[in-house]
Image 1 (cartoon, helix red, strand yellow):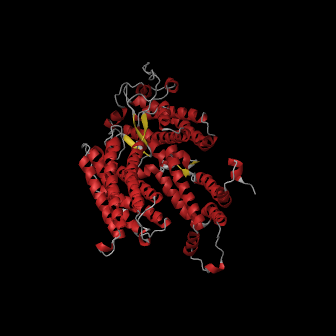
Image 2: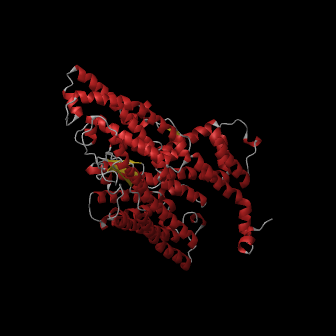
Image 3: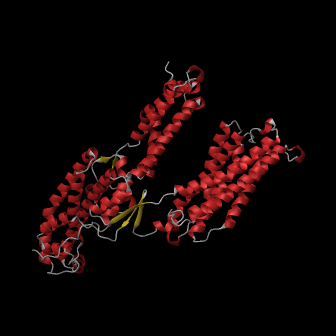
Amino acid sequence: MIDFPQILFGVPVPWLQTAILNYWIVAVGVIALFFFGSYHFNTPNYALSGGSERAAGPSTLDPAISRINGLAPPKYTTTRSQYQRFMLKYVIMLETAFVVMTFSPEVVKSIYYLSGASVPTGQIHFPETVTERAIWSLFILTGLLTSFPVFRQVDGFILRALHKGANVPTGVEQTAQYLLIVEYEPNQTIGSDIFTGIRTHHFREVIAERETGSLERTWFELRCIRESVKKYVLNCPIPLLQSIIQSDIDDAGQRVDNLRDQIFNYFQQQDKVLPDYVENIDDFLMSQIDKPEIQEFTAQRRAFLAEVQALKLRFCRLCTLAVFAVEQRPERIDMRLKSLGFGVEVTYLPRWHWEAIFIVGLCVILSTLIPSFIYAASVDNLGFSVPAQYRAYVPVDPKQVVMWALMAAALHTLAVVVALAVKRFYAPKHAHGGTSDAPENEICAAVSYMICLTIQIAFVMMSGNPARIAFAWALLPAITGYFTGKYIDKSRLKRPLSHLRSWKQAGVTGAASFLASIVTLVHGFQIAAIHPIVYIFILYATVVAASIGFAIGESFQRTYSHSKWTEDPAVNPDILGRSDRKVIGDLIIQRWTEPATQNARLNLAQGAGI
């Protein structure tokens, strides 16, 4: 048998060799599930058929014209960072299920019972070894998950929920809708070539910006966008993307060519009806709507405009799909859309500043470990004995004390993150001084309590302690979540840093810890029967909790909610509040005040043409 530690380190390591022999299948399974989850999350392919239009309200655009016929994989329908973040969540879910099923035989038996099978458990073989359970777990998660009806339905529900969170496929839909309405400034070469081919008077005048007309401008933009997108896709380095949308580009281009002669004939007739100069063609036609010939002419113009806008939306979808597939960073998406002519600015939605959260967590760890070391040293030096009935509740040896302290610090830091997530969810309602009717800070406390309670139950059960003690101690992270929400509110209202509130948090957290210690350790309130170690632990727990509360209050206010460089929507919701600004997944897209391209504007001030 190969001695791997001997080969790797030159010396035998028996426990490592045993671990490799017993658990190699677990490592293989984790790697296999990562690749399976990464592949499976990119299914199924989605149709981009105008769902966002119907969701936004009634639309005059024909879905049969504006939709993309090809099916796009989820990866290409949203930003890469958004997709990878939710893909990782799916992979973690698979990995967690695999580890739990592999190391917990009871879970496998519970699944069997829940399936409603009629065969008695004594007549079937449940895998007993880690290797057997790992193989069966892989089979369930990779085979049954995608083929067996019940498993497939559960997996489909999870995928749909995660895809929705990742903005799949609405990322392309929403971005294309925004590109449809923003200013468009075509590439100078493409725009000049198309302009020189204009053969009707008023069409040329509108493009030269001496007149205005919705149909003329939209038709010109459509032809420019068609050429720009076609050129961009032909140079695309992803063959799969080309195979998906090339047929759509050809089909939409054919529709543009078929429409070209009809619109040319219409513009020719329009030049005969309109005077030589009309400031606004649409307003002029509406002012003459009482004339029968103008009524028919206007109806024809509206029909052309609706079809042209639908085709423009289709090319905007193709453009967005290609850009999302090729460009991976927001700054690259921004640069590419500008180079294609769209007057937009794309920036990354400010996310949590993990540096500040790390500093908060570090302060919590320090405020926890220092009293914990003092407590552990005191218990050890003073020679206190801990009765058996208290060993499940009171940490005594240094290793146990450090483990409990780190767990407490992790839970309180997690409560800060949970509170920020809740506040970010409600942030849009506070833009421009708006208010929310929801009790946000109480929700922060409730969500923090439920999440931390779940983690604490698992922790105490793994350490051999009764699960009931978690219900009392989970109240402490809930208090942290509540006060974090209060700090964010205070910062949003531009109030200064409050030391008093930090002391309040310290007092409330310390009092909660004092009560949790009494509920957990004191029974019957017989003072004389209370063991001395209980008094020491209650004092220790109260001091540590108060230290955590004060450390979070001071560090969070200084490094996050009152930091000058913080632009988190939870703290500053006005970054979402501009009327022309739209949040799409993890991007903020808004109109750009500069010309869309960095080329010189088109020189369209030549003669009127014919």
